[in-house]
Length: 103
Image (cartoon, rainbow, N blue to C red; front, top):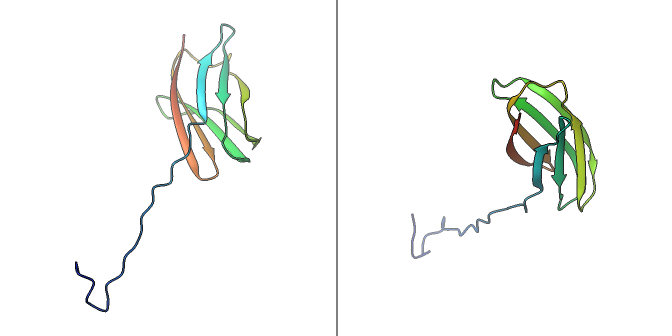
């Protein structure tokens, strides 16, 4: 490492951390077994939401274009077994996960 910058191969590289505001805000099963997702995307774009059980089995998938702003999505989970599920939302190269329990 060349600390004083006197060598010809010395070069400074600026590193920045890219962070997206939380988009997946509220995730719960309502009393009828419907999975409710409160989402607030900060950008427009294609979105994929995957729900998996704790054994890694895919229970449900939702795909579509979401616009910037608050949205509420519902996924029919009435046939899903009771237990914990992982909800993963992917949009524009970012991924967020949440855990939710169905009673």
